[in-house]
Image (cartoon, rainbow over all chains, first blue to last red; front, side, top):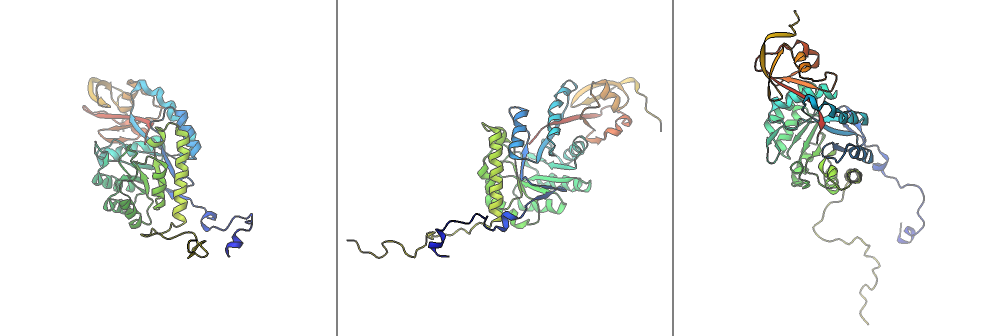
Amino acid sequence: MDLADMTQTAPAAQPHSAVLSQPDPLLVGGVSLHSRLFLGTARYPAPSVLAGAVQAAQVEVLTVSLRRLAPERQSGQAWWQRIREMGRHLLPNTAGCHSAEEAITLAQMAREIFGTHWIKLEVIGDDYTLQPDPWDTVAAAQTLVREGFAVFAYTTDDLVTALKLRDAGVAAIMPWAAPIGTGAGPRNLPALRTLRERLPDSVLVVDAGIGAPHHAAQVMELGYDAVLVNTAVAEAGDPVAMARAFAHGVEAGRLAHRALPMREREVAQASTPMVGVPFWHQTGG
Amino acid sequence: MTTPNLQIASALSVQINGEPVQTFSATLANLLAERGYDATQAVACAVNRNFVARTLWAQQVLQPGDAIEVVSPVVGG
């Protein structure tokens, strides 16, 4: 096709795209998901805002947690009723646990209460950075997998820890982009890229530290399978709109990954055709 | 198997969610009722860091010094 042809009126039919014409479900924990944005349920100004965010972003997976209950606070379970009515997949976490033993027990309690074998395993090794403890995370993962849990393991971007989690048989490995709640975005993209390359068959979900939709797009472009966001949506000025923005970011990144991005070059290369450049070799008058 | 007595003669010292508690309840189920927990609500328990399934609450005999955790759903990230 030459330049003149391209100026003709384009046909109405959608040009063929193998990527756009193929469904792209995420298979994890025994289910098939359309949405690759997982949403945390904490820190929203009101439950109705969370519900709006879930709706606006078409989220299918929500994280929840367990905390000590005092008898006089049992009326607070209206919130829980509301979450249940949303009908989404629940991913309970073990946030706050500092040992494999604590995390395993909390996972067992979560399985009974939430009626799911999914567990987002978090074992904190340092209270200041909320950096996970790789030893106890791997030990807890091994036990929980044996007990029939689908383990979504929160970890750093350390490759060897991720390999051990894969060998333990977890459902998903969830490396941080940056420490929980910072919104700093991917602090070590080469490490995240290495994880993706070395674990091509594992479900990888970036968890923690995502602050803006372009961070989500960035890791999805690397080939991550999903992104988990909480604070960046909940603490936005308009969480409902931000949830939608994140859904677009995740989808854009995923599509870009599947569409095979161009390779980066060191030097310039003109994108406009060089043939027929006006004034070429014309001497000034 | 005999069913444990619902009440015991002398008070037991246990902990619920880190708080010291004196109880005359013999079992975990009795203790929860005594403390005002609604067993129909979404609640899960552990004793001495071991999960105790809801179906076993009535058979879980309390021992002096037991550390009991009672948890329920909350928001989370």
